[in-house]
Amino acid sequence: MSNHPLPGSELFDGVSGQELFSVNMGLTYRDFLVLPGYIDFNPSDVDLETKLSKNISLKRPLMSSPMDTVTESEMAIAQALMGGIGIIHYNNTIEEQVDLVRKVKRFENGFIKDPILLSPEHTLADLDAVKEKYGFSGIPITEDGTASTKLVGIVTNRDVDFERDRDIKLGKVMTTELITANVGISLREANDILRTSKKGKLPIVDKQGKLVALICRSDLKKNKEFPQSSKDDQKRLRVGAALSTLPESRDRMAALAAVGVDAIIIDSAQGNSSYQIEMIQWIKSNFPNIDVIGGNVVTKAQAANLIAAGADGLRIGMGPGSICITQDTMAVGRAQATAVFKTAEYAQAHGVPVIADGGISNIGDIANALAIGASMCMMGSMFAGTKEAPGEYFYENGIRLKKYRGMASLEAMSKGGDKRYFSESQKIKVAQGVSGYVVDKGSVLNLIPYLVQGLRQSFQDMGYRNITDLHKALREGKLRFERRTESAQAQGSVHGLYSYTKPSMRAE
Image: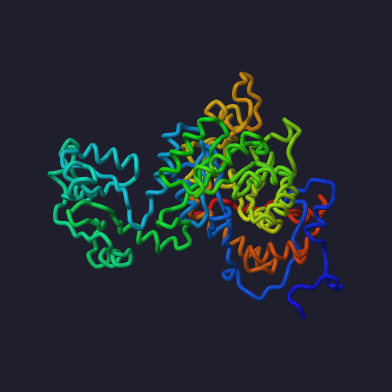
């Protein structure tokens, strides 16, 4: 007996993806179910590795949205550590966005090629400023604070923790008896030295004693704790950034490329425009090694235009987000499941992955998006309210909350969110999003493992061990679906109880 019934068999229940979405009606993730398959493996056997874009693979199909209440450096670091990726928003200056990307790229490294340096004449106050800006305080000291002079010491927390006078010069507190390694040493050899010496940092020097790189003991610990983390070929965490189609984005692009951004998302509410096509072509011409994800789109025709322009990935969704009111306000958009299936069907034939953006509020929505062709799921509300999301917590009626706003809300547009729309010169702003508050969800570092485990169990129920096999079954019509009525949706959720305890998304 075959593990999965063959087409034409009397046991071949349900409909194919093509048949499901052939109806002239927009469907959401809640309008259908995937029929169960055959289980001969454990959830731990499920491999969720996937494609963000043509040239970038990730271990997890999860990413955080480029929203100013969702993704800055702390969120992007957490996403990359957990195997996904964060996209830094552009409601900021070029310098601010570049600094956020730089913080992610510096967070975890093999060889840190351009470490922050200070001189013996700098003070503890200067060290404090570095720690506040970059989040670390173990700083190599060279003769003049640049890489062009000899390494003379290093300052770590243990050297300065109990010093009250922050005007003391670093030359008086720095450690001068250093264990170093010569340039050309392998990362494995350098790691062995760190282990045996029990030092926190290992400077790599050339024959003249000049610092050429630095290795941190804390990175070894991070590598052990986060083996699935998303890294580039230099062992730095991966991070993406959003751009608009405005002329200033060309300067922004050049600055982001200089600090090592891995992928660019063109953040437009309606991506099928001459402005975006020109921007994609310009980026691919000037920065061919950086993948560009176009969008947002919801139709095959839109997808075709951006793929022809050179897009390495597509972002799908127009109006399904919890804080988005585009469909109501503009009467333009598409139901999200239909949008994902139709665009993925076209893009897959051209080797371009698609990202399902919006309309995801639980594990089942993620599983359904992947089942109908998405390679990644971008989420805003799912990650809003977490410890790593920008903003401060506050209490209302005893409930701990954080702000969450759409980039098309009037509040966000006043800060630069209107760059997503082609009405920058208009004085009257029409909101396509709202501002609100979400409940504290704890840390993303705890939330993502919960989502991943749920996804693995969903894949087990569907009978597929990985996303590649799931998509192959979708294309071949072997993955089976079934529409469900509103009554079936109600019955598939909690019902018939006097009261119940709702499962919390907050993972401790």
